[in-house]
Image (cartoon, rainbow, N blue to C red; front, side):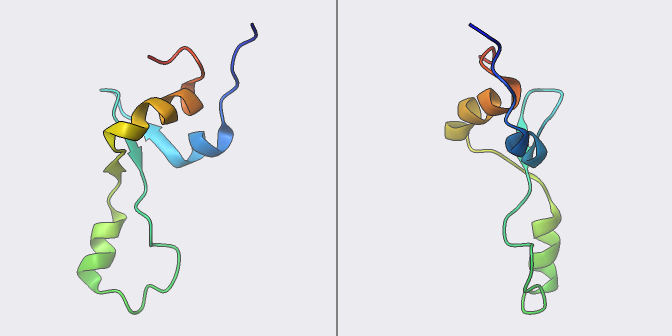
Length: 68
């Protein structure tokens, strides 16, 4: 069976840390920022970890089939 290709859309959206955690950008930061408070905008700047239920699926998309 051939190697599984990386899903490039997923690779651009997720980053994997050295310890293996998967990080993603917060949603809600694309536009309409004027009505959001400063503290809310600052909290949206921070990357957060992916929920545990989605980790296996995202790791497969980013790394291919060999991911455990």
